[in-house]
Length: 309
Image (cartoon, rainbow, N blue to C red; front, top):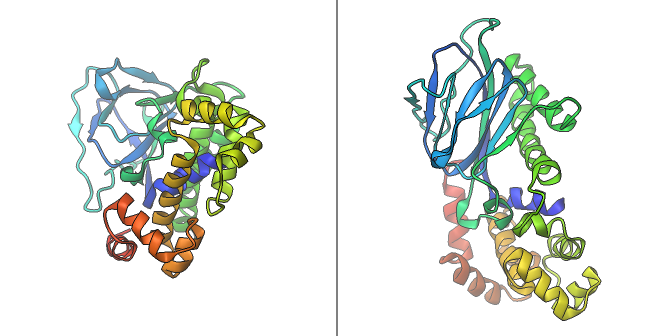
């Protein structure tokens, strides 16, 4: 699952945010489309998700988790017929999730919600292949690690302690990985396609791990095929069919994605970024980077660091 971790890290920008809120009927909120991903967890009571794309409402019970990977607009309410009020974004673009309004009563709905900012200009196909929303219903004995992360996050938001400012973002990062891992491993379609199938294929997964573990290495199709224990031709066909790109095309894409992340998050010299991205020449790296991003590496770094976190 290292590929999953890398895909998340490559797309993440800024700090995630979350809130624990008490809802008292009647209530309904319409969340606008955004550049990130979001989740909702029902801790107590019930709610209805009004999914994106006009799909039918989905009832959520205690312990149910919903993840929306693509930032589509959606609604959340106590009943499908309850009018929705438009949510107003905070100045930083984050969701203005309602805060607690006193003690929680038996007929209240207690929600835990959060959002992540993602760079959709470099969206990893592993995430773009996800459905419009993922519903992980509560089941006894299922998703233990996900439930543990939800419990810890809910406790920190309900009763902040010294260090919570650092703990909450770390728990949100952990929760995002658990959400996706849970779906990939337990809830994906029985006949997976695309990246779900790629991560289920030992040969393709072996090659992906090799690329992600060492993108700077001058990989050849023959070397990757050897990692996959397939002939060169058979490996190239299988990889292209499942990943959607030929092996070396994906390698180049991942190198450039890695380079963009390094330029945003690291102050290493351009020569070092080039080497870590698989280029022995800073000039060749700069040319390839500008072809991919439309700007020179130095300018990309300057613009990225000038933007607020």
